Length: 301
Image (tube, rainbow, N blue to C red; front, side, top):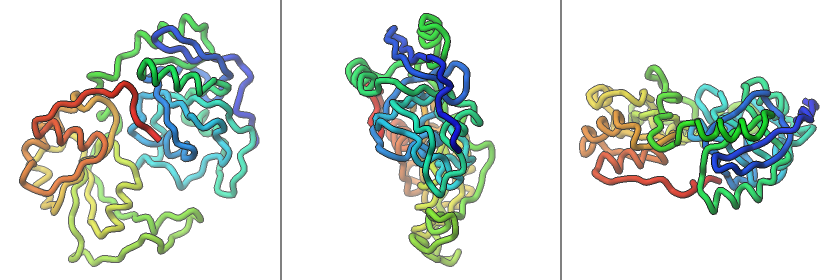
């Protein structure tokens, strides 16, 4: 786990407005393109990389040093364990991680999953730029800055982009793991575990738009029997599962582009108790007649 995070090759982060940030390449050697956003979380970079809500985005960490604890097998947030971010931006990437839970370094993990990254970036300046001018497309790579600016400008805007199709499951699945089945020690635990008989459990159908593992775990903890379904599941098929409640998950992209789920929710309103989070509650609002608009920059962290 001691491989250095940087190739030593000069790299650039170039925004669609022409602003360029210099740094050093690490992770996968390619060009990464997506919407450039920042998160103010001090820790949890593995959870951020694997959160499906970050699909199609270049994620900048405002915390200055990233990678100290490496990567482990226990903390991914995506149900399939895969990272979803399109690229990763840090001030300083740790050369040698130190954690007894780590299986590999951040650099090795990014290489294995073909995620482009850049270190040495003035992330304070970048964050202030995005704060003042709003989130915008960007490109990371070792190519000349003019080529990266062109790539950023040619990338599709987030408005109107349906990213749910990339992360929603292909088939229905059942979730049974609670937080008590996951601990920092990697062995079954008892903290957060509540035992319920199937007869006592409320059946919750989750419309999975890119859900995080810990949301599913928390539903199990409070005694729910959880069935997750794809985003294009019809209202009739949801009701055929005889749910006591319906949960509409987090996910990526523009809510206005996920009209198929809005149609389903419109049919379900008033028929079962429903709860939405993140993208899910925006889709519920649209189904109820509201309009959504994109913030200048998202609140992450």
